[in-house]
Image 1 (spheres, one colour):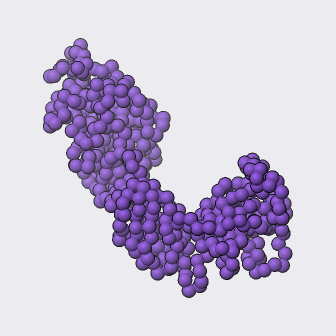
Image 2 (cartoon, rainbow, N blue to C red; image 1 turned 90 degrees about the vertical axis):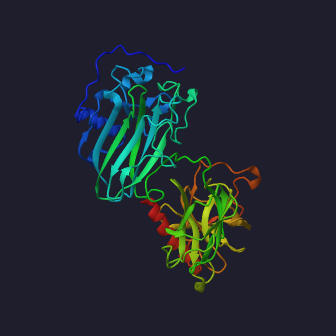
Image 3 (tube, rainbow, N blue to C red; image 1 turned 30 degrees about the vertical axis):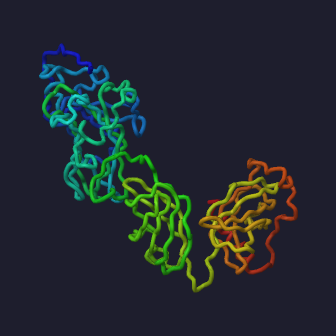
Length: 487
């Protein structure tokens, strides 16, 4: 049975018409939400609220601030009574019965020019659970927005219900999860996220409110934290509230094929897990509308946009971005457009394992990417102590196909310690650009004994001379890359 302590207080709490908090306390409360003070456009008001209903905390029980070190706390009663499990019998006569019914903090914010949305985290607790589930008169948490992009209440569940114990978000009801909160025998939403639209450059008004509907007996509280603006619009057309940590997050393993012509129109398949029909996919910033979910492990983009529409009219790599609600997965340089009129697709390196090697020993590494041919050569471009390009030729062992790409297994040359660029050259003279960074370091793991110890087996470094045009390009290209890295 829920613990209820009778109040010995006979006087009602003070009603204050506005600015109930002192200026410093009000600023501290807004700062605890992580709102920069320079974005405040005017004062902070707390109409018809008691100063005892607000506090700045680092945690409440096991629930810590989402963005350390502090979070704002609003209560329908005295915040000091929360962890003492104090409520009042209906109709009650203590400080929590009438004056403690409505806690409001409101202010105007100057929206940064880049922003298309803002978000914050909240955690709503209520002693109304479980006694008053299904009833209309529950404590409620609301956030009211007046923006050029949206006007109205912005926190509700997927069914449009306001935040009360009847809300689908009200899911934390295990007492072991609530120890020390003061709502140990009650319930909470846990930390959830609200994302709402705004317009860059405007001044918007926002009001956070937690209040009783019919009585002042069963108290509730809300933690508010991690307020931030974003250039990304909210999911859908309006405000969204939910748990932004998905139970089954999207994961992409590889893309096949990973390259194609400038015209687009061809299909590609994303292989991974937890694909669903509500995923939106962007290629180079352009949404792909023709999508088929082939089970949960394959997502087919049936017709890619052209290179021009994807933002690389002359060809090149583009990002593939998958979004679902607030979830976002980015495959950097996930697909490459190329001009078929100029020949085959140039090689491109996407990963190297391991990412470093000892300078004085042969190490087997795997260079993965696209567009390699069976006669691909691999070079490591570095600099000597005078800043002159130095090229080490790798000993290529195997060039093989992988799902979604290709792999070159090679032995590293001896190189001086420091950063180099890996460059792959195909037999037709096409070269990977940009070069892929690789470090030679004495701290790198020693190669296995079966690699032949420290012998380079004839793969010694060579210094550029009047060689082929391809090697001249390598030197010029590598020097530019290394100069860029040294800045």
